[in-house]
Image 1: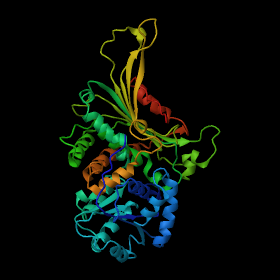
Image 2: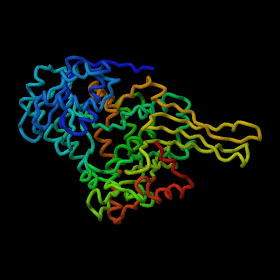
Image 3: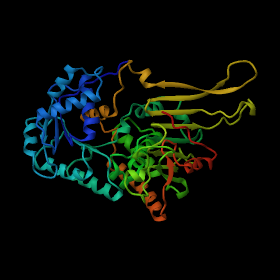
Image 4: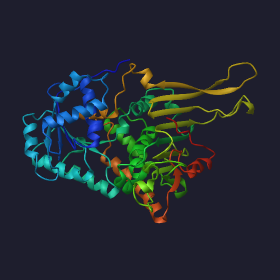
Length: 491
């Protein structure tokens, strides 16, 4: 099966922070792949902007080298690369000063009021305000202007509100695209299709039939290279408040009246507002330490951040409840951490046992289980109970009905589309469904802030856990108290 490609009209896209890691690894490779797929037409202008004093030819040479490392030749050949680079120019620019702004005006002049202009803020949040102010003062905006801002969207509720006010003073909410790459993953969007497009699941999607739900985002990497940021943020701010919160909203929200950006985001907001405060004994924080015989600086969090008294968590697990009619009494267990045994992002929907087993105790306990894999191998697995083959009585076993998207939906040898490809093209098309609204961001911080304030007031210290493990042992106790257990962390 080959996905349908719908080209867009020529547009302008300016990447502020064009020499940074995110632009090199994600944004520009995503644009290149969309160009190779035939979605980005000739006449499109891609402009890199950063403080580095590159010329356009120098930047193209650097970008060519980067793209050859990031994108397979099976997808984009040398000829395609040469054509793509002709769309790209570069402007040395100071986000907080005046250098380069006149040159940027010249590059995108004469576009017309109906031409889509995308300004991607691939920079720290402290530069969002100065960039927004200069875009307006230099007359670089029109009715079709969109800005894309990366997380973190603030450090707490107060700073998130300040950031939203700053952006709102220059742009309408419909022009602001707060990007969370998790929402661009094929499986995340398929979650909505599975729920709302199949009669099989939606009638069972409630506390009457669902025992509990687990959301796991596990990483094998540590914080090397992000020490300063991570020591200020920790796993709660870096992952739980945004990525896992978004997954929780999509799994728990009510069906929207229609598949419309504001209708979807209205329902996500209702989930956040229905979340109960989290009790202290329903929270486990951890900090990775060296495994036995481990070698390497990034095996020990405190050594990596050069703070032997650090109380920042690299792991967090918690039990959440949603106080509404659909989910009353159904616990949601969320966990995320660095330096765990495998890279894995999974949602596990654990259905309840049948109310009465006709097969007797020797058949064991069996319940249906829906596993939604976000990475690394995107797909959905439904576990069903069948009779174990062979004579000797009625013995039951669980078998998976598995759909791996890479195998089922993509031609062999071709990588599935990256989340940034989908999200950037949604910005160009003006579709905000997969982007967070300002009130949604503030509501998430409103739930998160009291949790952080609580452990700071108590002076809680994260529990150490071995690098390469599944996290601190207290996280297992969190579920065992409820006669449950975590699903394994597997690649």
